[in-house]
Length: 228
Image 1: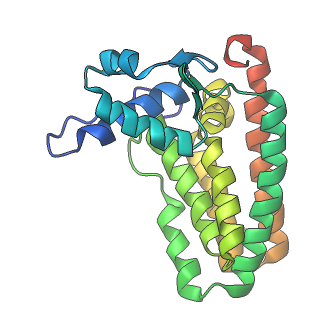
Image 2: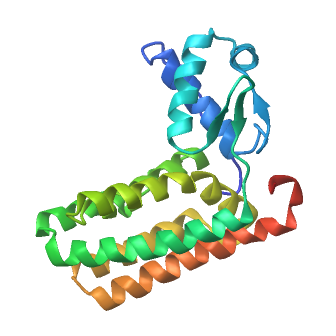
């Protein structure tokens, strides 16, 4: 499932155009079809996606909130470059925050709250890679939500939201180490430890999970055009 990627674009007429354009633009950023570091303008994107500027502008605002693009005054927008140093910092911060969230979830979440994590024991049948990346983000955000600390939750989810592109690149560059079953299996092991309220096991598992993700990402060193 993770070896090939074809973004699924909305064809249902009931779906709002702005959501479809957001999905398409986000998929293009994740796959680096929109090159990291590239300058882009609303009119060019409107032409690319064959829509007016309004849904493009809405999509750009949402992508800016996720840290995938930045506004360049009087020049348009820029696809955020992928900085190796930033990636290292993000992984370090993510590990500290997720371990804190898991500890607090084990201490404070109700049994029903923990049982609700069972929703993430499957990524869904025949998911595209973009859908899998969304599933992965939602899983880690859900754990952060269980921390019962609003500031910690916001900080952790903010960091997690910046990982979509790193996650995508990691599983694309190391497909043999990133099958859907293996990665979901890691999530299931983390869920088991949290539901058992085993802090030691849960901490060890999230540490290994994040470190494996980091290792996969840094295989991108072998693909210089992606790194800016």
